[in-house]
Image (cartoon, rainbow, N blue to C red):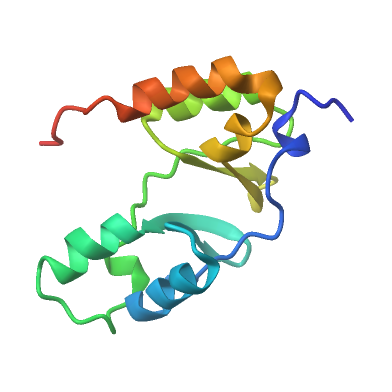
Amino acid sequence: MNNNTVKSIMTTNVATVSPNQTVQEAARLMSEKNIGALPVVENGQIKGMITDRDITLRTTAEGKNASIPVSQVMSTNVVTGTPNMSVEEAANVMSQHQIRRLPIVENNQLRGIVALGDIATNHAYDEAAEQALTNISEPSQPQA
């Protein structure tokens, strides 16, 4: 196995929620696992991502009940990577799209996830992680 691939650093036992689970269930899982984002998966396929920020902005801020389904607040335009892409490619994709977590998909099935921290803790990729974080930390233009 090439140690320069995403496969070598990705987390494989990924906590996920299904689109019909409640926002409260997603928030509870995030709290239990101490994570800020969950892939939304149905039959092994990624349908979206839900973050603690999605819950805050699309549920709490709008006065919605936490018993609404995850599908109503998740982001659906999910950027993904593949197990065989290089770590540098993954860092570039994350930087370009200003995301801190990249779900890894193979044959339409979720195989793992790479967080910016996974790249940053591997000293061989310090430069890639630093560049990605610099770009992610810059404020983006508000979406119209």
